[in-house]
Image (cartoon, rainbow, N blue to C red; front, top):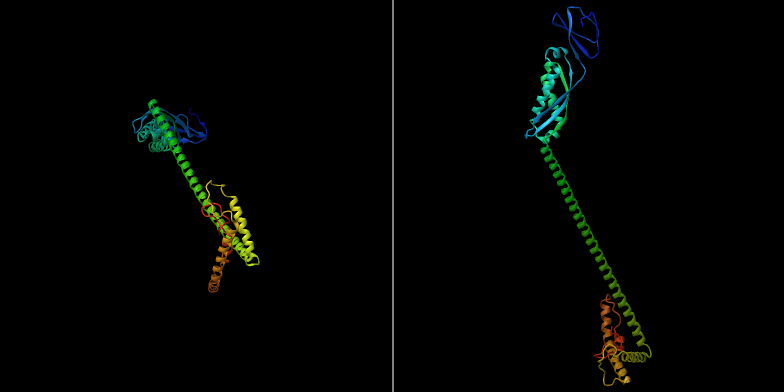
Length: 334
């Protein structure tokens, strides 16, 4: 109404014409007009305006028809251009948004439409702002609400997603199987290594034990031979040796025919005295031989003191007596 005093609300711009020509834009607050000459022609809101873009069809780069809609946010920056630059600013921006959206969708495939949604919105906003600068309108942002695809395309997309998931599951399962096989192989390898090391250590320990046993047996035999030699060299040593041979002779006869039914006996098996006499004769012969070899061994010991050998085995050989062809023996030979 053309009155003298006007109060303009905040965030509004009133365009005044004087005698049909643009005069000025009233600011918020108290304003004065000249009746009959001044007239309020347009009222523009400076607030952010939300426009619902209707659903429309668009064809993607791979020839898939889509149904898409969106929401447009804009603001009037220049009330003069918005009043005289275009007849209906909101309708013009809506149509521009629809055409720009169809144009941008035609540059992308169906998969990229879903993945590059943000870049699609920014491209639409940039295209709208290039054309709406002459209208005094600034597009702030554009958001795509819904994208509808044909049912058959939707089914194929679902099948593709399922196939992709099955592929990932198969790959993950194969990787798990491979890692499990690798872990099992590594475990077997470590087990074999540990087992071989344990066997090696066991063999070394057994060898050391056998070597120690051989040394101990050798030392024991050496001591026994020394004691026996000293005993035979004493008084009545021959009588003691004769007694020992007789005892072993009797013991050998007691063990005959225990392991086999066939035995071989000498013709004078019952004549023990002749057997003892024969054994003592052998002992005397070996004693004489050892006495002859003693100086030579003494010289060898003097030349090489490293070779410390035990006394000769004369005494033990003297008391050993066995039967030929029989498994029984009168004594163990050294």
